[in-house]
Image (tube, rainbow, N blue to C red; front, top):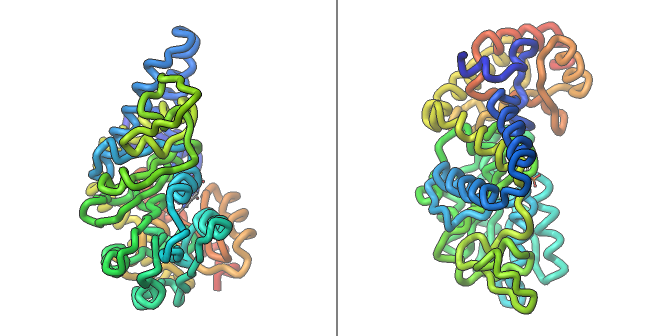
Length: 375
Ligand SMILES: Cc1ncc(COP(=O)(O)O)c(C=O)c1O
């Protein structure tokens, strides 16, 4: 069976919506079945389930070149950032959180909630399809505690210049939180090379699993100085200490976890990540670039309005085009058997390694058929 055949949806549809949800594989289906079988056959195999949690931590760390002790396994990106926020102190001079206008809304919302604890949120505006590095230079100063940036914008596919922003932030003594939800799984990510302090992402898009599982990377040098107040028994040094009289957090990034882990989603995540590893990050990046290049070429040849940057070094696996009736376009394309999505008046087309040139040809044919909604 080919890799593509492991994703049954391709027998019926052209699936190009991985920025929203990865396609379901047979492997992930079997993983869910295995979870139910383990539960049925073994009753309450918590030892096994905690082992699976640790295997997920290992898998995340291997994907981003971190150590397992630098990874918290969380139920969502929002949960991870909230716990991180609870560990920051806004009583001193570093009250500023700098947030780009390309963030997924949960990021802005979580930091604005910290205004109640004294944080001041500064937004870095976009200029068309980019957020210029100079704008970050203007916003980051000695009072900045943290800079929150997305790797690739969920609305338009633009890729931020992470190394330049990290350099600016670190020069002023600020930390950097990178949201890699739209990148991990589509390209190699090395936290040591990027020098980010925190990285978040989840498994439901390019890591090929489902909602309810995410990760927070915390650079190990920061662990001993961060004391989250959002915790629980899975954040303790000894999970099974069962001490109701004290909070004794783990010395590792597990201090950013909380309660019982999302075990079914862990089974799915391990299966999704394993599938991804059959190709490896470099190979996937090459394939995704070929596909996004073919999409851009087809879109530009027909004179449609490309929103994502043309330069392949400035966008991710998500290509967007302008439509004046985007909801109708998504619906008509679904009628043609092509699954895409929209945000902000932009049509979002997001291939993964399982797509091929025939998918792109069908996409361009469908766009051409509905060009009245595009130009
Ligand atoms: C870039 C980005 N960040 C965060 C999220 C949301 O994360 P969660 O729902 O796990 O909090 C998404 C989901 O679409 C996203 O695209």
